[in-house]
Length: 334
Image (cartoon, rainbow, N blue to C red; front, side):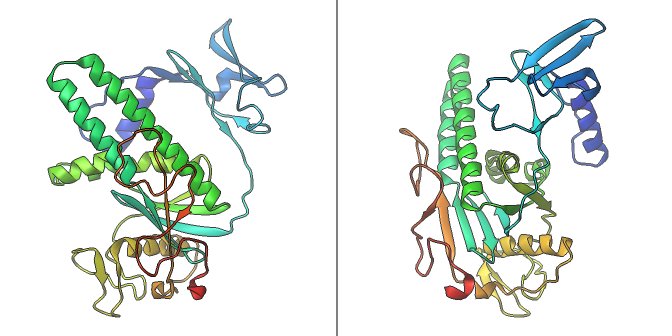
């Protein structure tokens, strides 16, 4: 049995030696223990697990009759996590996925910008999520200034629940809208994005955007790959030229003359970087793509949203710019 403090310290030590963590040692806020596979005996027929706490002392856990029983039929049980109030049972499967498409995603503050030759450019709106978090930050700040701790904790729990609900619907909608696809994201380091080297306003916006949670939830439903984020928005996807500065929203290549939105450039470069990792050459012209697919997630109830582009499940919506499309088309049909 591995305690939560031990695993947290080992993780911190590895990240600290790589220069990715500060010298301040972490603190364990929520206790947990990870059970090793050698201390578990899994009975897949009875759908139960016997965990050895100490010699001659056991605890049994069963998932028979649970809401997810049929969903995990044939899956294997991973390392069980014990908490103060519940037990987490991870399941894993070796299901073979017939990949039909690869989508490169650029993670931004207000949107996820994707690219796929089969679909074209894709924009997922994150402004409803950002608006909700800004409103709750203001409510928590007011409660904290008045010393109302219970009100602060209430708003904090409510914010986390609504954030999880939004991200769950987003991840589920992406996998339904783009089935059998490999989703390629940037391997972002949150510590670098919120470090003291960044301006204060930029640090707050980076800390507010849950890129890691979005990628984590998407990995539970689809195949996720990560590529290095260096120079994705400063490299020309047509000729490979790297500009020295990153100014403005429009990327202009001084070598080949390509002009394109910088977020779209990053999405194309992420897609091409994944292909090069797989051994494919750099041979795609982004100017051939004329279409763009707009999608979004609407918050339920009287939630503070800036612009909720759709209601219910994730689907295509009408574009906001002239010349864009709102359905699947091939690039050469635009």
